[in-house]
Image (cartoon, rainbow, N blue to C red; front, side):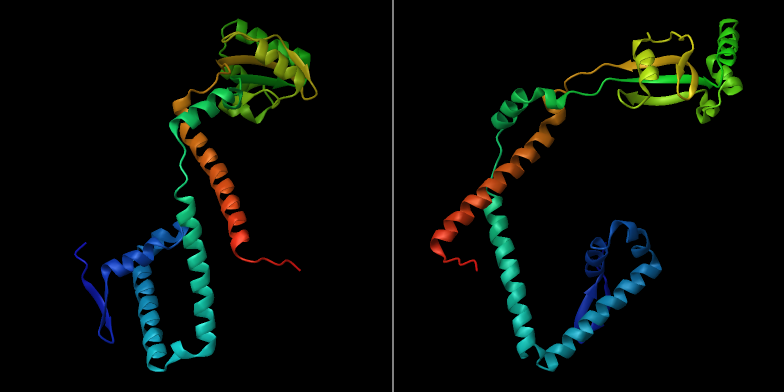
Amino acid sequence: MENKVLAVVNGNEIKEWDLEEVIEKVPVDRQSYARSEEGKKQLLEEIIGFELFYNYAKDNNVENESRFVEQLEKIKKEVLAQYSIGKLLSQVEVSDKEIEEYYNSNKEAFRTEESIVAKHILTTTLEESEEALKKINNGMSFEEAAENFSMCPSKSSGGNLGTFGRGRMVPEFEKAAFELEVGVISSPVKTQFGYHIIKVEHKNPTFIMPLDKVKDNIKNQLLQQKQRIEYFNFTNKLREIYKVEIK
């Protein structure tokens, strides 16, 4: 970007970089419009309007009005306090040793859920379920049988239920599904919804995620904890310096 001048207000140049800075502050869901020609035109008008009011305020001595001075002091107080807090918290660090120690002491917290990928055929009666199973045993694919016999919406995708862990399905279905070997087709399983024929496509056993996969999350968690402690400790020290009365 060559940073060309887009407008001049009372001798002050508004450049492409100024417009880009405003666009960057626009919410993500409005970024596309902000970067369109119409969006840029609208934002440029807003910047010009800002400059016009600034010049008007300067020329009319608004900055010396008591209400403005009060608001400016409030803003200064807030910014100064936030800057001071940020400066304090920026000094807090988390070492690799602390991360490793936390990981080793809390490994079970990083254990993944056992899950499976399965398909099923749901029928109203046992006879229908047995008929579907007979067709499969005679060469019909599980997916075709699901399309022909299942009353579950998943029949349109060959009975695919996707990936699920324990506690997601009714007990009878879950028990049968998790006990099945991959590729094996179950006998009809009765649940409150009807009769299911289940086929497990894949099993994802539970395991503890390695440190390198969770290191950043641990660091952020420990950093927040240490920053909270640092904040409260420093606040208590300040209470010894500056008088605080709660009424």
